[in-house]
Figure 1 (spheres, rainbow, N blue to C red):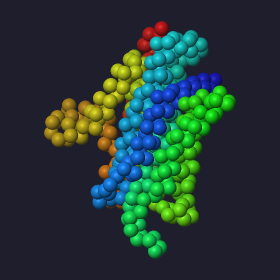
Figure 2: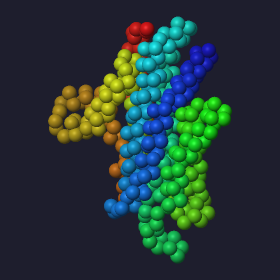
Figure 3: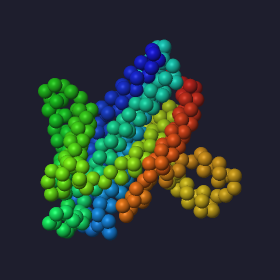
Figure 4: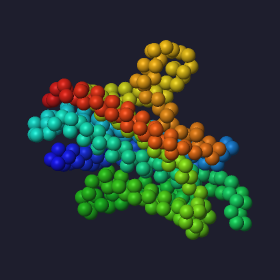
Length: 328
């Protein structure tokens, strides 16, 4: 129980410290703002209403999530090693394994919180996008300007609430704005579930595309794997090398199907690389949602198992490396 308590405390402190970093807040606000702007700036539907808003939201989720995870991992481990904080903590009766795994768990909590905001923003942006509607006496294209305007105003409102709390009660601005943004996005999502595009109260009979949720879960799993890479690498390197290596891993994984299946490599070398290189295509399901497509829950379950196995392998290698890391 003492070890579990140590793990929980360090995990919680890691998550709070990452959220209090201004970079984490700026990346989250940028993701929400960019996602909200896509349906408002579109001039064409390209054959399917809400497609570009949905694909753009998932892409922003993956892109900004990469930076959030790498920055959180670097601030959680690399910076503490350089500053000597890790040495002070490990001088207590705290094992290196507990310290390392708690750091990864804290970073994963930040990624899950960021992903929750990103997925809800993507679903709201898809709801905002112009689409052909047949409901009652109305037949034609309609855009949900109410939801779009609320989504655009969510970030400024969250910053305003955090600024007031910081001025009057000395609350940390970054973490307060992050929490307020989560609350505002959740309230807007509840509004979108209860009211249709025309403002009529029709609970659970709205244009929310729930099929985006499994795709968002898979994108979150990809970010968790990248976080495992970032934590393992940041035990030895700084923020910029960690970001560079993680970006390279992402690019190589996205091209793995072409390199290994297209005939560029073959034989036992292709099989070995297929087992080592993470295939991010398993987690990018934007194309599967085209033309009212769905992601099967069985596929989501198998992808989650793959992510858990791969993350466990990366953490084992990271633990071996961290055990021999020299503390300052």
